Structures are given as C-alpha cells and as structure tokens.
Length: 582
Image 1: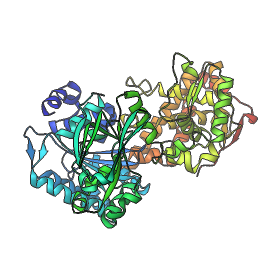
Image 2: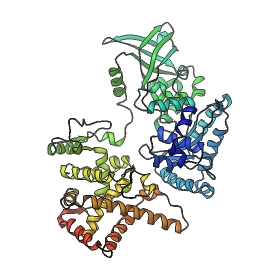
Image 3: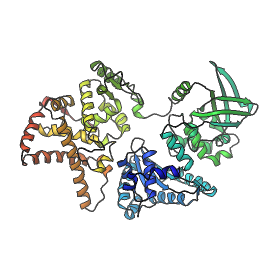
Image 4: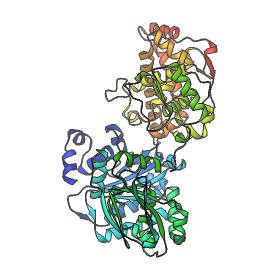
C-alpha cells in the first residue's frame, strides 16, 4: 500500500494543498476510505505545529462519531509503539479540552470547539491510527492494553482502531468493490455440541463453538470475515458492544444463553468428529459480537465454559447468500429513520404523492432505489431528504437538518402530517434541487470554502434563506410561506435562479460576517458550531434584509427590487405559523 499511496499522493491536488507526505497520506485516507470530497478532507486536517498528536478530526454527523486520526506514512514493514503512545497522549489531552485549546494551532482550536459540541450530543469517539506498516510484537501488546484503557475509562470512553497496512488494503479494496478470496478455517469443537441437518436441500451445521475458538478466526481484525455483512464493526464504545463485553467478563459461562448466535455462509462445511472444516467462510450476522470477542481476547482465552452458537449454511447461490445477509440483519438495531418507513402518516404521504405524480416514486426505505427507466427522475423524492427539508422550511430550523435522529424521533410528529399536500412535497424537492445545483465544484455563487466543506447540512440553511425572502417581501417575519405557492411564484416570474443565487449570497454574507465579528472579539470561530446554532438564522435573516436594502441604492438595483417585490408577493393566507421543533 505504501507504493500505491505514494503514487496517488504525487497527484497535483495533494502537492498543491498539503506541504508534506504525512498530511497527504491522511488526506488520501479521508478521501478514499471516509469518502470525503477534496474540500471536506482539507477542512479536517489539523497536522502541523501545535497539532498535539492529532493529524485530523472528522465529525461524522450521520453516524454520530468523531474520528480523531493519527497517521504514520512509512516504507518500513514494522513500527514500534511510539505512534500508539501519541494517540494515548492525544486522548489524555482531549479530557481537558480547555487546556488543550490554549496551546493548539488555529485549525485544531476550531475542531476542539466542534468536538465539544459533538460530545454534548453524545457522539462516540474513535481514534484511528493509520499506517502503511504493521506493529511490532511488543507494540501489538501495547495496543491491547491501550484499547482496554480507552474503552474502560469512565470520564471519556473511546475506541482505538489500528488501520495497519493489511487493514488499509482491505478497506481500500472494499471501497473499490474489489473481490478478495474468502477464508478457510477449521474449528475444534465438541461433536456432542454440534448438529448437521439438511433443510430444503441446503446443508447446515448448528454448533456451540467455544468462545476461545472465535478469537482464532482469521479476518476479524481487518473486516474481511464480514465482507457480506450489512455493516462493519461499530467499535467497543457502542452501547450493545459494551454489554457484550461486560457479559464476556462477568458471565462468560452464560454467554450462549444471552446471545442470539452467529450466522455464517460458506461454500463447504464438513463435520468430522471434533473438527469442523469450513471453506470460503463469511459471517453475515455477528460482526459486532465477534469483533467484541476479539477485542476481549485475554478474557476469552481463559474461558473454558464460554460458548456461542454458530449457524453455518453451505450456500453456492450468491443471490441466496445476499438475501440471507439482508434477512438475518433485519432484527439488528436500526435508526429512528428506518423505524418510520412504515408509519401510517408516511405511507399516506407516499400514496398521495404517487397518486398525484403517477410517473413518480416516494422512497421510504433506506437503500431503496427507484428505477430511472421506470419513473420520472424529477418526481422521485426521498423520505430522508423530505424530513430535512420540512424542518428547514416549516420549522425554520435548518440547524437541525443534519440530525436524522432528531427529525425522525424527537420531532417526527410535528413534521410528518397525513394531510401534507403532494404539491408541497414536490415544491420542496424542486427548491432543494435548485439549491444543490449551486453547491458544486464550480461554485457559481462564490460560497466560502468552509461552507462548501459542510455540504452535508449547510445547503438546508440556503433553503431556509429562500423562505426568508418571501417573509421579508410580504412583511410576514413570524410566519412560513406555503412552499408550493412560493415555488409556483418563482417559476412563473422567472425568479427561481435569481432568488436561489441571492439566498446563497446571503448565507455566505451571514457566515463571513459572523466569522469576522467572532475573530475581531478575540474568540475562535467554528463553522460547524455556527451552522448548528440558532444565531446563524438571525444572521441569515439580517443578511437578506441588508441585501434587499442595498439593492435600492445601487444603479439599476431598484428595478430588480421592484421585480422581486412583485414576483414574490403572496396572500396572507399563503402563510402559516412555524411548526414547533425546539
């Protein structure tokens, strides 16, 4: 991987934006493994003088995880425990954010602000040590000790993940959807605790496998054992995984009874006395459990009475294997958004929308795809995106649009109403598409780079700004315009592109003004914290007022203002009160 990455980071983008190979390596990882774009990746880098052993901070708002990254780009095969000690040092410093911020560089100071906000929202912390080498034997021993120390700490529990050369290659291959050979493995078992059966022409073995045999299975560390699983390990700080670890430590002999078991598929399974041979093994349900067992290896290794149930299915049909993977994970913990996909109000909205737009499709389930050959792409809407649009427009709280958990849990009843008109759904869809058309690499509106780095949520402030134009023009500052009426007015009067551009400019103006004022007062400005704070809404509304006022005094500006005032005029009945969401 060293040679591969060295070649990749010789590209002009890396040369122009990062001064050394270390930063380029971390940026490569953010782009290729965390799938960030060029602007997002650059915004995460904190490496340099005063970085306090923290090379990058990436806050994943969708998964509610803060990734704190330390990179070691080297050509040698092994590294000692020094990088691990640097990670440990950064973890100790994060326990005192105030003190850390005093001595940190400017980029890290901003990230510390964002980290503090994320911790208030109960985000998990994951330290990633990424390296193109492997660890020495003694360093691997230190890794186990450090992982336990971080996960067990009551003041700031965290997960420590080593992404070494082997794991890095697997993650990169997976990102490219490349195939890897499956795993062959032999389990030592008690034949009296195994049963071979045939069900519907498929051979299966049900076995109670000793816990200490589980830690010998290859592919747990790098994730290759779980390539057909619907998700990879969530780390030791995950609530469920913590419970599993606690049972392993305190009640290992009862683990078999407390756990639902592991589902694995293979090309061949053979039970011969006390030896269970598996070819092309893949675990499709049980990633969290096996990863936690692996992380508790020292405890498990000394457990003689601990067992876990395995179901091995001999499957040759890849489609059937994929279906088993999906089906056996249907009882896994799911997000609030997934639980709402079959809500009666959601289904009512879906039915009404598809009756109104007969060539359209309302996507309610995560991972569901509407065939563009079958449906009009302009009439394909998503429940997830609609939730974000509703809270930005009707609740006037784009500051919450980043949080699917809040939208589909805390505020669901306020947002999703059975009588919400399909025309309004489509209007929000069209307005959002117009907004996102401005958030491109070409940056036609001239947005600040820090705003572009927040493309996952800042565009909802842009959508909010459009509604503010209608409120200001119609002197209805405390109300919310009907999105269908608003969109119709914009299209009819050929003002859609104009107002979308102006709304983007106002967002940009509000952002840069807030940034300047904060820094002028000797304080640290955090873009992510600003975008999540209600103060940003006041700033945007002020920017809209100022822009409309400024147009009146520039040559030719009054003509545009008159056109806007006429084109955006609505009846008072076209407004309603803000839907409460805080």
